[in-house]
Length: 500
Image 1 (cartoon, rainbow, N blue to C red):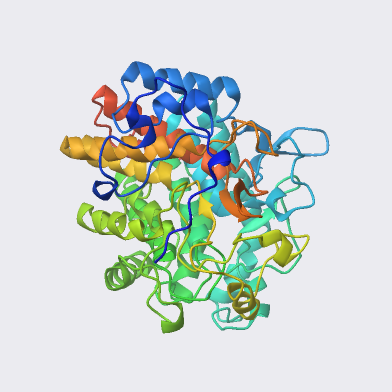
Image 2 (image 1 turned 45 degrees about the vertical axis):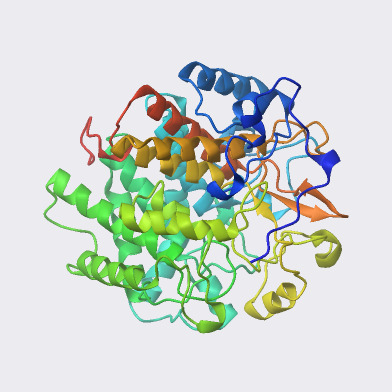
């Protein structure tokens, strides 16, 4: 597919004189690289945005610079109650120079975003405030699900509700995957809640904290996990046509099955670790989920969707999360996914998938005052008609995860080529940090760059907390690689009992 045109020269700041040619991506012919490396929007980061792997001291230096500039500070996105006290979850976007996103849907708390944020906080700061924030976040989600969504799952599990059809009215009858973080209440506006991946991410993250002894399971949380597993079984999540990572076209998504399979495997590990004799779900639910999800993933991957045929998609950036942090695919399949991602890689970031119309060229002019408007399947057809090939938005949350996954490959194999690729995609992630001309402020991690009036600019959802935490994890894995650390996943540790 055609790639998006390069940005006009004035938009991309060139490195200062004397900067190595590697900072421009000139150290190797472009044909040898899976992605282009342009100059950083921030001149201060130019020396780190190169092909040659950083030294450990350089990595520490760039991390200190980002910390000093607030680039990685997710605390601005903490939801607070009327008295200003944090409630646990995070809004999707943090406050910026233009406000705190109130009035936009990005002020809401998504399960998917929050669980990846929580895991990243735990992974990068397992014994400090990051872990405490992760626990508070996951506890708030569990409380929301137990209070407001358990009854929805029971109606489905016991055959009183069918939520698997194409009728958009039934999508509100599923467990809600977005809520009001300030109050812990449901958002009653219509929304597409048929998002099995979001449930899988919550279950997986909750179990990781239990495996590590950081947040032992209590009775209510144990019950909740059982309900979620039985709900996924009842709707046959391995064949369910849900909305996927991007909350859009109804299809069988590999990126939805992956988190559910990862959660199932992790819970089985927890059962074995703790010697549990009684599971909170039907006796054969876990085996049934693992068998069917694994079989269907094998059929679909490295594609994202193969059915229905009208939504066939052979490359989707969401699949990188199956590689990292979920680690639910073998290395051979991970390499296939990385190869497919070349199809969606642009000069700044990666599009979610080719022919993605969300934040396409002049999006706000075409969609109206609410660029975060949600769409039914029929409305999506109209929106998709606005797109011209090569004008897809380029997102900033994938390059860090590709870098982190290459880091895991390097740490397990010692192959220098993987370290080089880890550096390339970390450099791309650093290069995309906003410059002084960004209307939302400098030194920020964007959701995406999109074409508006012929110029590539950060979209309104800046800074995106998901991107911030992804970059934090990428830096963490680079430190592991440069330190010669071959760590087991954080969830594999067992400092204390996972059950209270």
